[in-house]
Length: 155
Image (cartoon, rainbow, N blue to C red; front, side):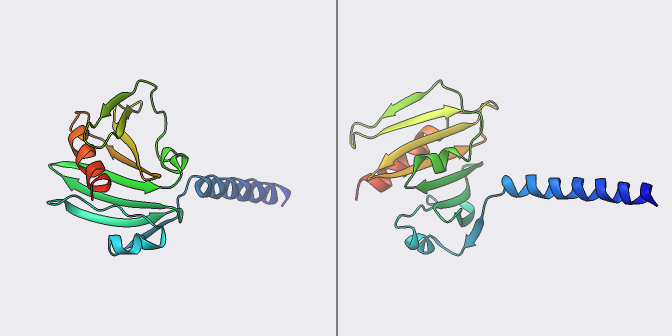
């Protein structure tokens, strides 16, 4: 009888620790119907024209997110007031930066790569931080980042 109790006790500890570790890494993702739902955040992200499979969400109550396919690549475009909220989505970002300066707006876009060589672009317009992520290994992210940044900076 003691043996069965001991096995049940160990089993319950394993189940409890597994559920705790899953909850620690879980984001609070609330799907929304359109970018109009981002108005509660005070900023917005929208998919570029001609995007496919567009999905909008509010993540952790502070991040606007749109996931879409564009020119045969999948992207995550996010916005948040705090840059650390955006950086939390990306593990193992390398220190080697590529900086793109846009002469028209004066805004700089920083492109980084993670350990899997995926591209992540960051920029700031009017105190809102934006990121664009692609698992594409090519540099197609540069042109799209510039287009999205200009859509926010030039109105």
